[in-house]
Image (cartoon, rainbow, N blue to C red; front, side, top):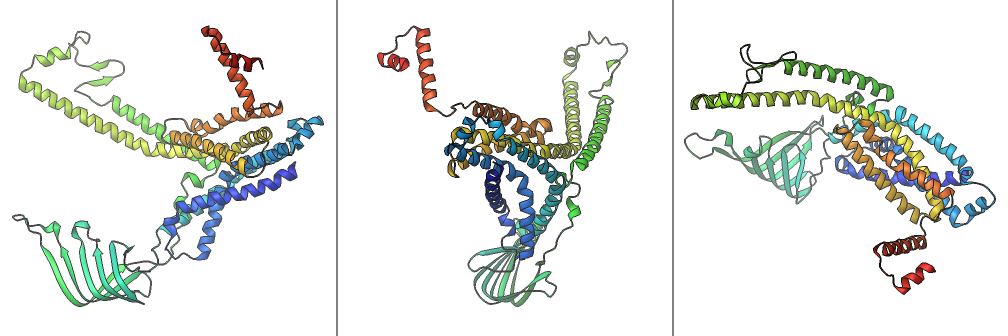
Length: 486
């Protein structure tokens, strides 16, 4: 059993890892294309990406491998032969349970010790690639936007010589754009490869100054220039500058369990301290001319009976000007209080989001590892029940199950990230939903239940229909009664 499962597991793991890698590369394809990145950097990026995707590929690979293994055993009646010999299902899958338990423990240590390092290196490398300038390859017949703040259009070119150029320079803002046209131009990098030198021959430039609009008229001053030779210098750093990994040192993706727990405790203390300060400030702040004290409620004055105090009658007894002034003051104080509350919310919002992400990452390391065990107890009994081997039907079932798992897990993640649910509720939602399904399928496979027998469901439907007839005191047709008796 272990030998048969291991071969299938390795094959499915590589397939799933390849599919996830293609999806990951497609997501960041626009950040890497046209940058002229060397093969050594791309190889490093692939290694980090593959390592990062391992915890996500393991559950799906286990589900697919267990479906295929037990589907083949059921299709070839090998599972039936073993059960006929008196070997129970749990004894059959016992070596696989031990293997999956080792995988679960290994996956946790991998997520805790290896994954933070690879994630930190991966996203630092990706950040460095994003900020690398694209390769200097001016296309013909379309706008080139690889230069910051400049769009360049060329009708034709011969080597370094560009013909019929049109340049839109938006570095001073869209409303202050400078437009240049030239018959011929030459483009090259400076010796230090930090700047781009563009030499224009026989052209014109036009630039308006919208910020300098005349105060008395609607005219806008502009400048028009005709030149025979003009040089332009643009910032264009074509070298690959790698950022330091310490850039993401304090992020949740770069920490293990101990680091996450320390950050959670520290930030929680900061949030509690800020919350207590805000509560004290709110209790001690005057609102509508009254001061709140916990022992005396709202203080109005020693001569005023609070129970008999009627704000509406006092307000209506004032003259119109005083009433307007009271309303203006009340609205202004309410707006001040609203702005103060929004400021307090903003002060607490950033550390709370930081805390939520760390709690999510803490639970994620356990939840993804435990998902491997759950997917095995879904795939193995499901394959024994459906008895379909190969790669076709098990692949369809695996994809459907994994999509359901992913949707539930993503929903819980977003709920936990926004603080609507607790972190443990969001990250263990998918596990709590799929765990009963695994228990149910394991029980059905152990008792040899016909879970996908269409005749069984048709028989149940006919019995239910006749019971409805009897309750409603209706007479079934002779064909329906005959089918029921049969």
